Length: 236
Image (cartoon, rainbow, N blue to C red):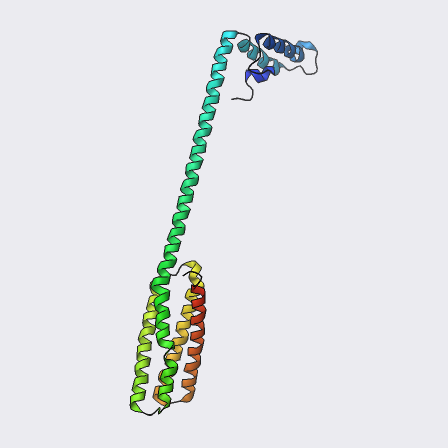
C-alpha cells in the first residue's frame, strides 16, 4: 500500500466514519489553504487533501477505493510471499551446491588417499624397511658374490618400487588441502632415490662412505614417511 494513500493524507484510519472524514478534511483545509494566512499554507498539500476528500467523502467512491486498497495489500502480500519463496529456493539451491562441492572434495580426498597415498606408503615401506636387514646380511662378507647379488636384487626391486611411486604421485593432481602431504611424499621419494644411488655406488666400489650416506638418506626418508603418515591420519 502506498504511503500517501487518501486516508493517510487526511490523517485518519480506514475505519473512520463519514463524519470523521469530513471533520478531518475541514481542519486540514483551514491549516493548509493558501488563503488562510497560515504559515503552513501549501498549495500542493491542499491539492492532495481535496483529491483525497473527493474520494473518501463519497461513500460509493470510498467503497471502490477500499476495494482497491485491499487488492493492493493482497498483491503486496503475494509479492512478498513469492519473493520469500524465491529466496528460500535460492538458499536451498546454494546449500545443495555447497553440499555437492563438499561431497566432491571429500570424494577427491578419499580417492587420492586410497589411490595415491596408501600405495606409495606401501612401496616406501617395501624399500626402506628391509635396508638394515640387507646391510646386516651383506656385512657377513661384502665380497661374497651371492650376498652381493642378493643386495643388488634388493636395490633393483627398490628402484622399481620407486618408479611406481613417482608415477603414482604425478598421475593424479593432489587436492589443495593435501598439498603438504603430497610435498612430504615428494621429498621422501627424492631422499630414497638419492639413497639408492649411493647404495648402488657402494656395490660398484665398496666405498663405506657411499654405504653410510645411503643409510643416512634412508633415515631421513623414513622420518619423512612417518611425518606423511601423521598428516594422513587427519584425513583417513
